[in-house]
Length: 293
Image 1 (cartoon, rainbow, N blue to C red):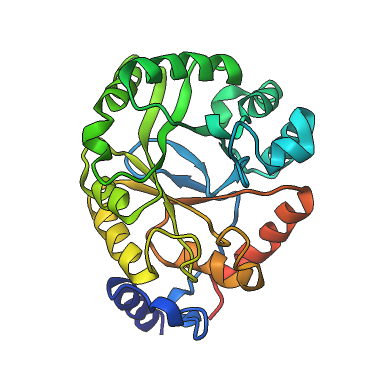
Image 2: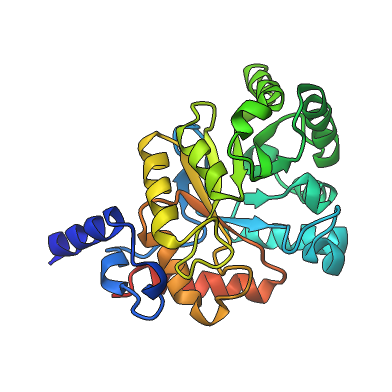
């Protein structure tokens, strides 16, 4: 029985999932795991040597212009308190970005924990060597940390990004060599950018839009799945985002969570939670969703 289920899962993933019909006939059995997974589970992030919780606390819901729902609604203390509440529950992976304006909020939370026990992912919109170097210095000041865990090129859409942003990539590579950065990569917002990331040796971590409804994704589910399969085979870590499709799939929360855990492609995923009740909801849903058959 277990062997049959594993074979179904492998065949299902290899064939690129089920496209637009996925939510109307969700393949629970094919994605069901044998043991429950939890938001606080410790996972290894690809080949980076970084270990953190399966779920990240995102701080950038509708993030643009230096603000997000979290920063606008909760302020520095409110966001910091929510991150600490998650940390107390074992969730030590925090996601931010320059564009969200949430570095000071994350920095306030970092003051209340041992820095080495938290993994912070942030992102930069800089494209040149000079601008990225400035960002790395500023980010460390804003976060109150002498090093950065993961820095990604943010919201990349150009299929030739790895040619046009070589300066920024070089600055991140240097930062890693100097010991002020642990891993670098890219956050993709187009199928062309995702294709390039799958094959680019420089990429260690990719932040990919991935959900069973194809909502706010770079392409349809089968297309993105095939690219992520190639990315995984090339040894890159994949972090899922847009898990609920920017709110379009809130009526399918269990299916969306099982999609992250059962696909075999996602190392971790980030959720832009805005209150403690949403955190508690995921903590309750995820274990049951991961084994649903």
